[in-house]
Length: 200
Image 1 (cartoon, rainbow, N blue to C red):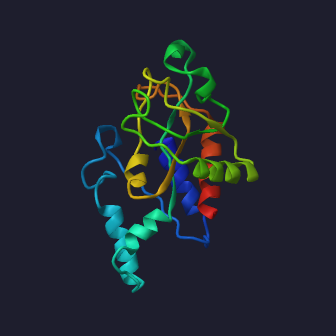
Image 2 (cartoon, rainbow, N blue to C red):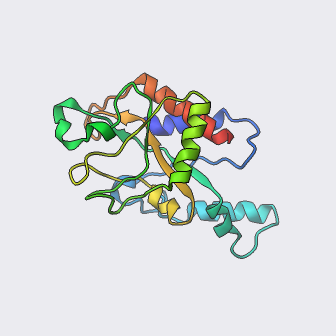
């Protein structure tokens, strides 16, 4: 099981009586555009939330839009860890390193920030405060050096609906290769960070 799926699923299963509604979406096809009925571009989550509102007998026009605009999300995809063998594709002052905690990326994208997501500063501060208050080790990172590295997650899809979204994931060396490498410490910090986030 992928580290971001394992940590986020384990975190939400350990939450009892959250103060606010908590949800964990496990979607696929992110690498090819998040299409299909199991990708984030589908209407499955919107339909699910609408059905919850129907069951509560409170659904009305624009309520789903308001829910999204008042929601907060961590996009739990993996982060590109600094690889000394391919150091030229990373900016050492903005890269995540193994064994230093979960990586949070304010923005993603390629050729700068194109086709990516960019979290607002207030939400970044909100997440950092949660992590620091609860002793979650984290590091600020980007997905590779501008114009050389880069990539994206599903964050932009929910951000386009008005959700506050921040990319937050386990740093990985050799991403998409047969032997990816992660740190047990980083995996644990991701789990701890997600569990803490669910509680707020």
